[in-house]
Amino acid sequence: MYEPEMNLPAELIGLLRGCQRAAALTGAGVSQESGLPTVREASASDYQPAALWTQYRPEDLATPEAFQRNPKLVWDWYAMRRARLDRVEPNPGHYALAEMARCISHFTLITQNVDGLHARAGSPQVIELHGNLRRVKCFECGKPALQWQEEGESVPRCAECGGLLRPDVVWFGEMLPAKALETAWQAAETCQIFFSIGTSGLVQPAASLAHVAKRRGAVVVEINPQPTPLTPQADFFLQGKSGEILPALVAQM
Ligand code: OAD
Image (cartoon, rainbow, N blue to C red; front, top):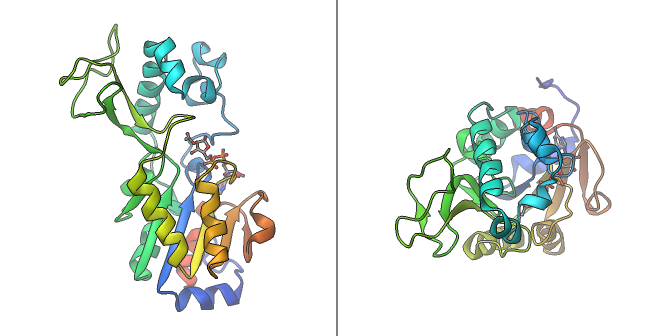
């Protein structure tokens, strides 16, 4: 757990207390303390230590081409990751962000994560730039599936058109959901404080949001145990784990 009296910059605490409009972009790092592997540290087998997955990297499986080549393999990898979600819980960092939304009148939480942990921690509105593992849609017609056979000999099919079902996540090379991206961009352009939390800041367009905010005059706060390409531009770099720093921030603001 964090130390509530953690030594945080007094200037930042002061800015937070007077803040009306804030935005936060989160990445896999905020779920690391819930036991989920981060993207760039993970091999596919980190999601499930079964021999089958050790030969794959996430980028080998999270593409439309991989799904078309071997739908069952890709479907099974996501089904296994969905099953794993039933065994993880939000961590203090997720809960602190839900609390922050209650303290700041206009707070936009934007996530690259597909694990749904922000919503489970009580964040009222989550902008999911890369989709959500728990949602499934048709690969052909795009219609969301309300129910499906999770385990079986073959990949379940769309009730509407008979196409193969797929996870409703953004795969490498795919476009982000337009509405989510527009909302995230607007929040970055209008916020007074922008948090970049638990993300390596390597994947576009999410990685541009902090720079848009900075250009518009926002204070940029980065929370990460490691420096990233954003760190030199951040006004505050809080080096450490989000599950420890975020609760201390909220406790002191
Ligand atoms: P990465 O794995 O690239 O980065 C995770 C970041 O979290 C790293 O900078 C770590 O230092 C940091 N980190 C690790 N533990 C942490 C902790 N306890 N507290 C805070 N930070 C911690 O994951 P993302 O940046 O989220 O996109 O990756 C972004 C996107 O790349 C993913 O959404 C995915 C991938 O392509 C798609 O799938 C479309």
